[in-house]
Image (cartoon, rainbow, N blue to C red; front, side):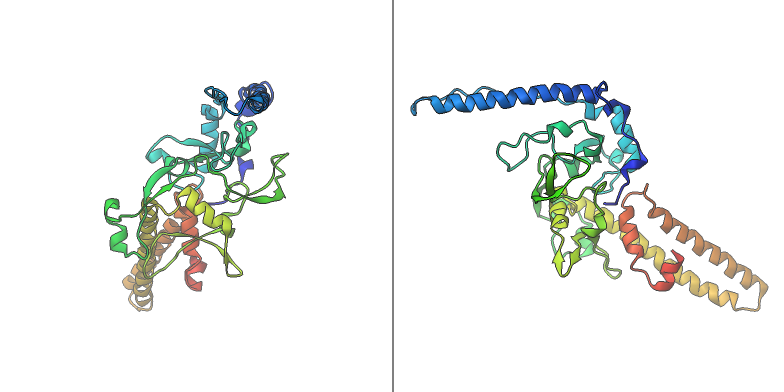
Length: 329
């Protein structure tokens, strides 16, 4: 996950203003949910007046159909802002399935919270929308690698790993407490337990496990004063950031980076020898090898650009290089 400045892409016109598609939908939603609240209050009063032996007949609950948030203009804007990547895991969702326009604060019910109507008034608000891959957004059974695990085991077929867990955000939205007023969302005074890449700095809550000797692409909670970030831990579980497929792909990236790093070291040694020679051809060859090293470094830098998948992983890996290597990258 990487920090994203939401102001770089303006809110789509379809969501701005009372006369926009989103504005009109909000007005209808407000009427619907206000009427629903009154009906529920009246129903509760009527049920309380019934004799103990009488049971109130439960009617099928009506739902409000939201649609403005899934407008093509919204998908285009999110795609531009996040470079076609999932806001949570940085995978390119276009490679596997259409984007899920995800509500950071769920528009419907909240899992595990009784009588919570969801944040319906934010269903069409730009600041509450994020692009997500299906696996981060939808609650599904996912394969997990065994821990500890060897690289050979990790890269083998998922069905050989054994472990499974129900992962994905869907209607989960754990709250730590009402400790922080949310300036961008008036009327909401709460401390969410999930990292929002447009509001939070993910590096304060999530870190990558970087082991140059035995690369395994795991995401871990950041520690502060020997205490793991609660929001980091919750985000890893809810978004499923250590599901097997992600760990495998991040491990492949780490292996590629380590290979490129070793290649640079070997080429540098050969180049130094050739440049120290008095032979003109050797010096020329040494200079050409230096150019090759710069090309490899450019490739590593490109992998860390915001538009690349798992760019935050590459950035974290680069910070573990030796000072001389770090100066170069």
